[in-house]
Image (cartoon, rainbow, N blue to C red):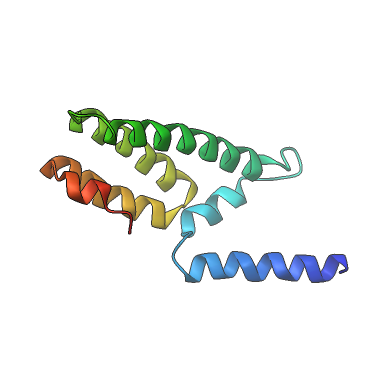
Length: 116
């Protein structure tokens, strides 16, 4: 596979992420901040997002395993994830965080444990 085909696949994949609602215009704005002085800007920001998200999701998972769930703390963690996902344009993650926060507010354990 040559470079042109790989570049075309990347464009197609990125386009599909927008169409499927995974990314929004905030990601486009993030990309516009990348320039020749900082060519890895988007990769660095997204990598930090993934690292932070992994940590938060692990903490949330552990919190759900507790006998007594600290809904306030979980809500704060999801609020943090919502903010960072919004900042990079991870639209679907942001929307799921809103749903999750509503479950925290209602102290709905069944909703919080719903895997769908």
